[in-house]
Length: 502
Image (cartoon, one colour):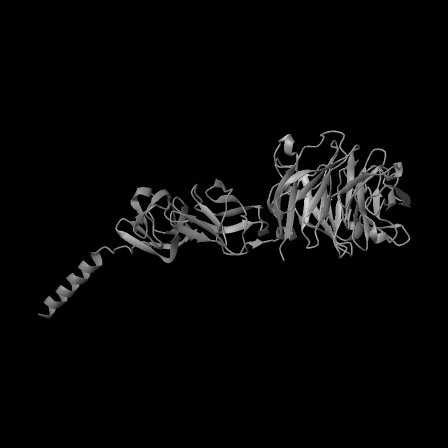
């Protein structure tokens, strides 16, 4: 019996020793993937172990959406995200085995903004958006304000214009009911010129197109008086009705014009005659004076000595005292050379005057000067003969003007702020009493564009200055003459009103 048991034990040990050992199963898992988010068609690389080297034997799913495997090795699969993808875990099925990713993949089925450049700008500036899922139907909003001028350069890049009225905040993209928002705010820069609103009031009857010496304007309560080359007529514009009509005719070529108290004073650029309108009478002076050929004419009360002051052909400043006949009209006048400091500068007939009750300013050859009590001129801003467009302090600032007979016209308020029609930029520049220069109307980047003069916000336009002028009302409203925004020769110039936000 004992021997039988020993035999059985022996036989069992032999059988067990003869049985072949089975191999351990090979590793099969997902170790990671990149990128961690994507849109339809995004190539995702899955790293792991145990994959089939035959692409069709690997079934990769994003949620329930089955992806297309483009390349395969035992440790890496490259797949294309399907249109049916869902955010969540990625699974790989190979020969009956399934591996699941430890982290989620984010499926993006709407537009996404990842960045933009520049990070700040003004209305009308172009910026570039970078992101995902940009389509032809993508709408763009800046803090809720819809943009136009959208150009899609690819599915990952858009160029867009910052819309009028945009404010600082997120940029959003919308497409087919889906939206994406920028991770950071876009900063809207609001320039000083955005506080100006420009309105076209009326056209001015055509003046000569060649040999012109400039269109001039003088402000009176609720009225503008306008002269111009090639016309022997002074026009009057009613600021209530906006009607423009001939006011008085002359025998000469009126250019300089000024109002003072109850008078309208008009000078010609030929021999140097003057006309005075007062109490309904319009009278020509009995004699002429070549020194007083007035290319620019302003009230001279600030000098304390002269009824008017003019800048003549040679850029000399001449004081004028007008005589009267019966207290009604000027029958004669006398002149005095006030300052000849700018005589002989490169551009003659270039000096333009601006006065208020206390100060006299002159702009000439890219520089602004102030008349001193001793009748010398002190530089306020710009540098004579140095053209450019630079806002800044004093002599560091730069202006451009039109040269001969087209110097930059100016107007002065009661606080000695000088407003300059800058010919070469299409902008109105402000020079404060300390000499600091800023652009308050217009945007140089629009200068020279067809039809640049237009109504609207001051930072979205530029004037087309040629023969022009500027005047200021007591409430700070500016009136500007510039080329009209149409080509009709019957309305070659127009009067524009500029109002500043408080």
